[in-house]
Length: 271
Image (tube, rainbow, N blue to C red; front, side, top):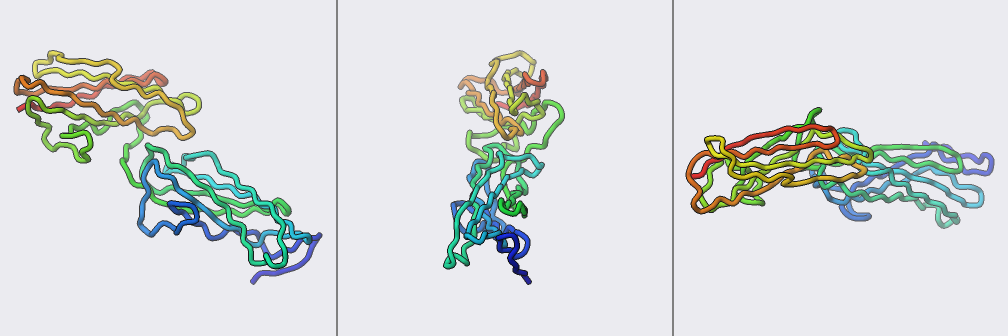
């Protein structure tokens, strides 16, 4: 039961509360259905309301709301969003409820799991503060973190867009060999800057190097959210006269910030 009294020119109706948190896929849209998962890179919309805020004798309302998203590891995805509401109410506005709206874009490379939105409202007239937490799920690739530079999940594919790797890495002369992997365990410079490169080399069964490319890919970037891993992908075009046999690709990754180097080798066959 709420209590009501007049004190120092303010209308009191109990402690400030934050209510009706909603995560949706568009502004003022319906809440995400139970079990629905978002994907990295998607924009989410969040809203909540405040109750028991103070209205002065002249009808003045002054509130400030904040919201911030955190990934499953507790790392903030973006800076906190601040929304201010300042208005004056009339008698016919007695059922009005302040609504705070925020939107966030999920990182393009982000771990799957439960993301949390921590939010609060501050009544600027009484300095009362109320806070809450909401959550949503994100699906996608999962690359375990590492304390040292490492190349994970190196695998061969038939085509660029294939989701499942080949169970047997075997190709025919003239085909394209697609390789994917992830690099993690690199260090961050200020502002979460990273500097990661990798080289690619191919050798035959006797260990003779047949092809090499330094700096096959370079990832130099900085962002508010620390990129958890660097995805790698490249293809090799087999010549029509490529001899049958076992071949190996070697990926050498370098972390310029942490001064780390690591190499990973994987074999495929030409039949």
